[in-house]
Length: 469
Image (tube, rainbow, N blue to C red; front, side):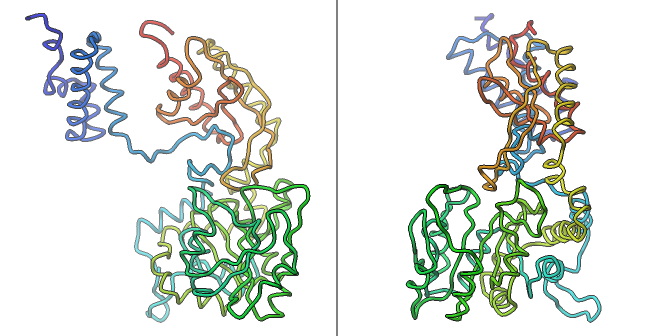
């Protein structure tokens, strides 16, 4: 009985006195570490009693405890290295912000700000004035307003313009956006009635015209940014839809989705609608995202005719959907970069990543391979040419040539290595493809290359049995 393994499990108080655990306490607080230790020891006891597991040696037990406490105390929202090759990864927060936007966010967030105060008169003002003039200048629109995402923009636009009435939209444009949210459901929540016209692959101007009646409130075009229909297809150009709307005194709402605000002259974006072009073609309202191809914070942007924008701004939903000072600060700083396109291309991370030459990515991949061959040759690293994607529901068929470091680890499965990378510090999110684990450098900042190599070595070591590797 005296040799029962449970007698050798250390006490909570004893562990708390150990220098390695004391370091954890300083980082995470005594209360959180104590709770994590108790859970760890309970798992240990159950393993010994019910699965017949052996207690590890003391130092190995401390290693396991340290890793467990760090995992338990870690904030679920962490900065990660995106090695997926997906530029607009929804799970990783879509577009990273420009340094100017980060600085504006921090400066505004750490202080009071004139969100709804006119400093000259001392009277109450409107928060949208922080960005409306910039949006008007860039798009040519008469007015602008901002809400918390593009689904919210669609919801409030339809609620303000078409509640209890019909909105005519092509059947082929009734998309499902991220998280299983479907456009018809968003429209239904607005109180507007959906009037589908045409077929999945073909919709003509006459289809819209025949659907117009006394209950019609608006015509709507939705850019299918997360899929493509090719082959025997037809859709109505925006200019023709606008002309039809004006004939019947109906506003045209153009939901362009991904958020190209001005022409960027990029072949990869040639199929994406541009907000400024939609305004110039006469769309009364143009809706788009702030955190996709615009490269700003998450928000939904509405630009267009003053009559309709002001009607939206006065709607009761605006209070629930409005953005805070942090979003306004980051969005304003992002929009200011677009006043000079060269500045936008140079400072917006999304555009920089898109413009990185293939030769540059290749050289980075080769340097990483040389380093990994020295430190962890069992990873069998190789520099390979591959393709990445825009992702995030944007330009789904557009492949981006890229260079990756491919890993085929010995003595570890790809799933084990991928998990070790994701749970490391910092977390690295790779992609597994063709029986290889790929670290795609298109979406890795150059300053992260060294950290990426160190993380790959540590992840491989964690996958090895004790005493090996």
